Image (cartoon, rainbow, N blue to C red; front, top):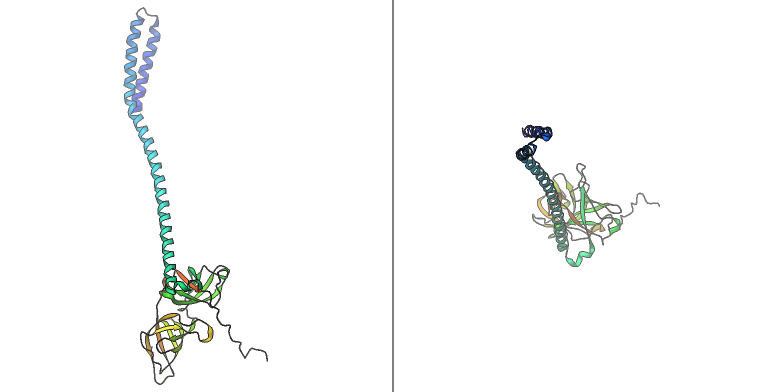
Length: 280
């Protein structure tokens, strides 16, 4: 609509201009010229009136575009700051977890351990293992114990690479370690079943009670003695059987392991040679 009006005003101004040229030879042309100039000025001002909203609209569009670009830049900056804040919080949490682990074993023993982050868990069914970000270059070796929250034994190094290592957790079905019930000093093997941790080969006459603390045993040299493993949650004994068994409740949440400590100053005893395969 505005464009149509503008075209009409321009046509009118052009007609007046042609009239001026045609009347330039007239006697009273000077008077006519003054009147025409006034008319043209009026027409010009009138033409400018409908054009002003168009100019205002174009200016508004320019401002809106500039504001939109500025808002986009601000949103990007906010996203970047939020990402930095999240990374900082995550770093603080990791530092706090490692500090708690070292505090649990005691600052005086901290140099015996290497902190490690859990990279991922073994997705295979019935397998309970994790991979950590420490390896041979950090002094990690096969057979070394791995501690979780509360200085609790959670697994043993089962394989090592240059910068990574695999930890077989105690709840893995292939795990079996020597343990001792702290109160009665009863020796037993801690194994894993689909139902949980279990003490095997417990003498039936053993004085094992619910709530007893279970520790690692140095018997056989596979592990250092005295590492916290869990607590007895059930004990079943049959007088007709030689051995009883006990259910052990772990003191660590294996599903939430994020950082652990590897006891790098421990070297397990080498396996004894099998007499059946040794040369005469």
